[in-house]
Amino acid sequence: MSEGTVTASPFGDRLDAAVRARESQLVLGLDPLPSGLWPTSSGWKPSGSAAAEIAGQRYTDHCQQVIGAVATSCVAVKLQLASFERLGAPGRVALSDTAAFARDAGLLVIADAKRGDIDVSAASYAASLLGATETEYGEVLGLGADAVTVNALMGADTIRPFLEVARSVGAGVFALVRTSNPGAADIQDLELASGGTVSDALARLVANEGITSSSGLADLGAVVGATAPGHLARLREAMPNTPILLPGVGAQGGRIEELLPAWQPGPAGGLVTVSRGIVGAGAASATEPREAAAAEAARLRDLAWQLSAAS
Amino acid sequence: MSEGTVTASPFGDRLDAAVRARESQLVLGLDPLPSGLWPTSSGWKPSGSAAAEIAGQRYTDHCQQVIGAVATSCVAVKLQLASFERLGAPGRVALSDTAAFARDAGLLVIADAKRGDIDVSAASYAASLLGATETEYGEVLGLGADAVTVNALMGADTIRPFLEVARSVGAGVFALVRTSNPGAADIQDLELASGGTVSDALARLVANEGITSSSGLADLGAVVGATAPGHLARLREAMPNTPILLPGVGAQGGRIEELLPAWQPGPAGGLVTVSRGIVGAGAASATEPREAAAAEAARLRDLAWQLSAAS
Image (tube, rainbow over all chains, first blue to last red; front, side, top):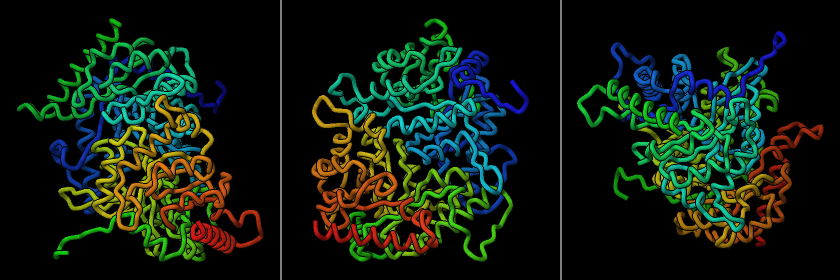
């Protein structure tokens, strides 16, 4: 590599290396709300007086505590952008601070943005989350996430601008293919005249647009809810090299035991995302939230790791 | 109405009244980028030194100039959130300042967010753009938009939380039904086994979830690209009371003359969104950007108004 050239490793390889190094497929989902935060850490004091600023600082304190409690069991965090955006500009600061803290804890950062737009607008979202923006006043850095979730209802026109920015920095993109909510059936499960469902068509799009690197994993991933494991084997067949992000374990009813097809391409083929199941693990017990979260994260991590090794 | 009760008019009625009062269906699309802004207004000076802050202030100055030039010909602005988000937190400040300026100019504000999520995350996006968030430190106001665009790939689970917040403040929601980009064909035009396309299924969802008020217009709208007028008549039949947002006129090739079915329920049945066609109208001529934009907006407004009156 010549001096001055930056060559980012492909996302598939980075993900594979991270999962193997940390022996974990567990992704900590962070979707803080003003009403459900952990007690502040000792000595926490807000600066400023606007409600949004203080709430943003509370978010950051909460997220840092949760990350501190469970990072050793996880490979990544998934940040739900909606949670942060409801605090306006201070929410973006909290998002950025939380992403930096997660990175320092050795975790990959997945921006759960579910963005879907085209052309320069898709490129703008990608710059905001994965890249940077040149201005005549200097460079504006984006969030620096390692991956972003997108919604491809608008077709390949949405996926390509995100992938272009992602590839330039070794980041990845996860497109919604079959989500974990009951209403996913409204559109995604509709049967097509040519056979298969809308989700199958999305899966084909994902398989076609991704580039697979030496690890055997592609840089374009898919989101397939853990609540509908019946779909998973079929969708894995259509996307043999695609890393799959699996939300819906725990609170929504998904079970890790039913996710085996995700790991067919290797241990990084399936990432198990858990939010409330970890962050709120102490709510039903007398345990400290921190200890309960750490114990639950360790349990989920072990379960997934053992199942993936056996599959 | 008893003291202390706030009863917001339904969005359909508000939209109908605004279009009739301003005799315009023209929506000014604002999607600023650091490289394509109008020259700064005289006396403009940035405060602060960070690139993102200065760029955000430039955005605001640009958007205010454009709004000032064309507001009399328009009924609304459509703010492309991606453009603002690439500047991080200062971008959110610019978005908010631009929305406030547009409101003061008598325009409705449409947040072109294309958000798609479920449950509390959808409610968080809705709070961020249409509502407010209660915290123990006080209320955090959202953007205060009059309407927001959403992506319902995740089904009615996405639409309902947005509509719930929207209805509480008299705001509206526009769901993507058939977008203006070539790649829209990848998923939206797929034929279903039960007949019709994915767009037709989205149109049924929109028709079912909207509530029509006394003006004859629903509070749940649709986005149908002006570049595919062949779809418009069919989709209007499936959504007889739905306000339709029509992007794609001008740069993308759509023609106002082909949009007549949009106005079947009345003059507010179709909103014509134009971005580059107005903001960049002076680029090809020796005219001031302001004068060229004002002339082009007036021309487009007259054309749409006359066609809608004749239809």
